[in-house]
Length: 101
Image (cartoon, rainbow, N blue to C red; front, side, top):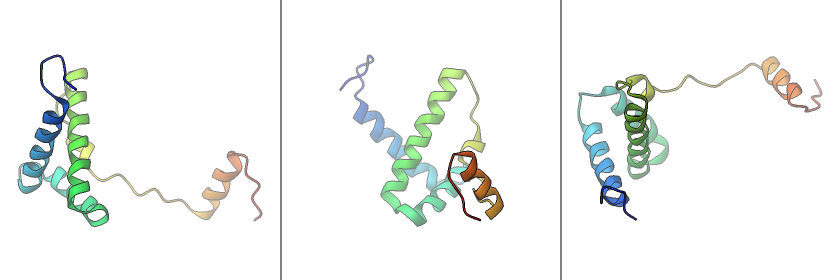
């Protein structure tokens, strides 16, 4: 499949993977390197590189579409999603579940 510029999607994908591999070895963008190290523990190198490449593609899209500058906060690890038992019970009740407490 070709884009309107005559560049194939696979060549764009290969370029993003090469960029992701370079960025994880560089110290210029520590947020990407940190994100890689976190994901690598769960997924392994190859799947993590693909995940980083997809995140880069999303960042490039938002930079071009919204005329934004690069935002490194996009790659910072998200806060832990935990809740207390009381919050979990309220969450379940709000969605229509019968909770026996």
